Length: 248
Image 1 (spheres, rainbow, N blue to C red):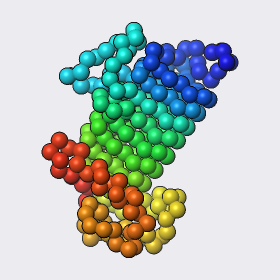
Image 2 (cartoon, rainbow, N blue to C red):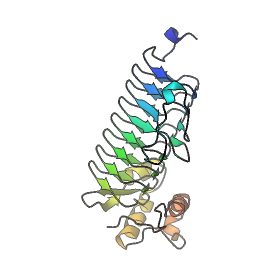
Image 3 (cartoon, rainbow, N blue to C red):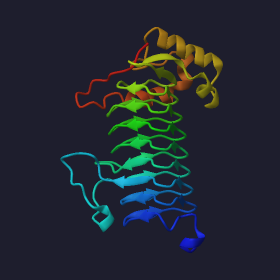
């Protein structure tokens, strides 16, 4: 397929070391620097900036547009959507990753080494600091700010403008300054195939201060066992190894 017949604009800059799958659309003015992998069916809007070096003073600020490829890369997974003006930086030790079918909306920023799960939404103007891990089916509201090395677990919702300085537990709703758990994402649980009874059991668990960090899930929460195991496995991203979790 010729460049003029493809959904990749001739006005996009695609550097060395960029691998592009089938059915990828790239808008005018987008800049994509290697090493980057764009999987099948991804959509990248006009003016998106993908693959600049990590913003870390101890690492080289290489000129990837001249073929000087360094760092750990970016991966845009199948079916992901990157909207206009979004910025995604190279990883320093792992690929900065946008999961399958996730959306990164206009002016959003994903710093180095961020892992964004599947079917999640990073809304317009959101900034996510380096090394953060964000689970599946997460929704981060407009202009929220996520501090580096934070964990946002599966199914969580973060309100608009929220400064996320602590880890967010599974299927919780978090907002405010300082942020607090304000309930559970009942709609997200339903869309993930869980019952209303499970939603109520999770809410009661959070009200008692149980953030699912230790012990076996209660029988009522057993359907969330995989989400709980994921949450626990990412509980010590800080260099000190001390987990810091948002509570009610």
